[in-house]
Image 1: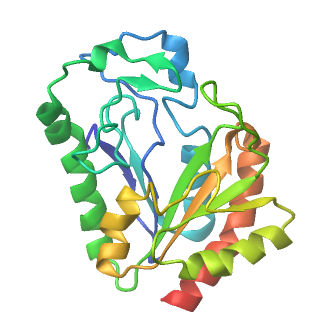
Image 2 (image 1 turned 90 degrees about the vertical axis):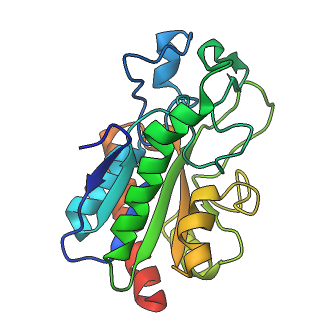
Length: 237
């Protein structure tokens, strides 16, 4: 057991789901200095991701590595020297407890164990395929922009799985953002490290949070993603 992650071992599948923002947990000895209600919002957690990941594990026997702490404690999908690794502001909210925090202690306690566990989980798979699973808020407080997409597909240099997944997701009736609501060429730290740097094929998916906030929506997305993952894995293994 580790406070940095929750690992669901695969049961015969070479697919690993990686969910960097699956938890809103803040350890009792860390004080962020924010309204606790914010821990139920998008700045703290990718809403719906843990549930969809668990459903996919049940349906496909794949494994999953789920973050064990909130992105407000440390953002596991950042380079370790990135300014936003331990955020002091998020979507207009000041995170007072992160000002002058011991950065190295947070890295050693959460970041390094998490990424070491991801690497170890991939190392035992013969032909690994990664689903990088995130969710995005329909609107940002700090930005006036429309976010109409039901799902986004993100990637950096390796777009092989994206080219397979996008038409399948569109055929399932979804409004798909190709490199939207933001580009994986800009923010793709975990996949750059564990997939692109190692030549492991992956699919980066962002689900819109209002569509996966209920059990019905979570089940729908798991059902939609299951054949997409299978098609990508079979084509790229």
